[in-house]
Image 1 (cartoon, rainbow, N blue to C red):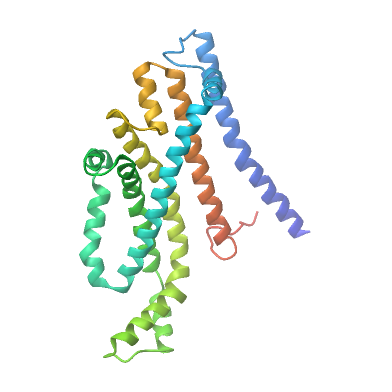
Image 2: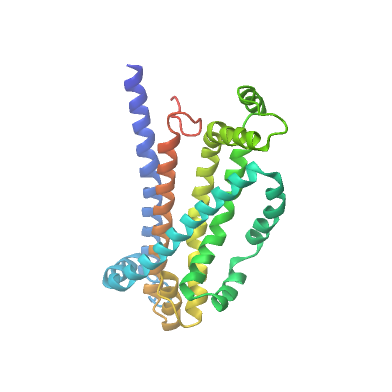
Length: 281
């Protein structure tokens, strides 16, 4: 009986979690539509949601091709950020000297606005590579910093206890490295997983932002085909409905990517981590 009651409670929570945001969005769109219709606002000032939807359908061949370009750049930038961020975080956890030498460069790369870096990258690199580099730069640091935090958050008592089962000789560097690698695999790796997934949820949005910023910089130079370029092009042509349609697709892509990473996080943590366990009603 308790299990059935818990299942009903979980189902109700899930329904509320889906229905409430959709109801709020629907209400906001209805208010927007009414405001445009009742106020007779011209479409070149503010298009109604119904006109934006019709524009998405009418311009779908053009917009979908641009959406695929932006999504491909975002996905590649995110994959490179995950590979580089995790690899560097592992290296930092194994060697303090490497961490002290390289971490300041990672911080400097993060705090420098990507909008200031994009024009330089477009000068020195091919356009596609420059756009990809911008997506990678902004997504790299959250993965690195969160993974480092997770790797360094292991209880020190557990590490000391683990070392007792294979403590290396103090003068044997190879044995010390082997011990560190075992601690990394059996203790630090599972401890870092929740923090890494939190960084991944942040990085996926930032990767999309980096791709959009770089595409806008490239588009202003007269080249590009991603959604950001369509926004710039629509602005120049005063095609405001298409501009809003591209914005809607960008927002939808960002929400979809975030939901994917959130679902991945719940999938990997739901059986053992407190943040993903089902709460009792």
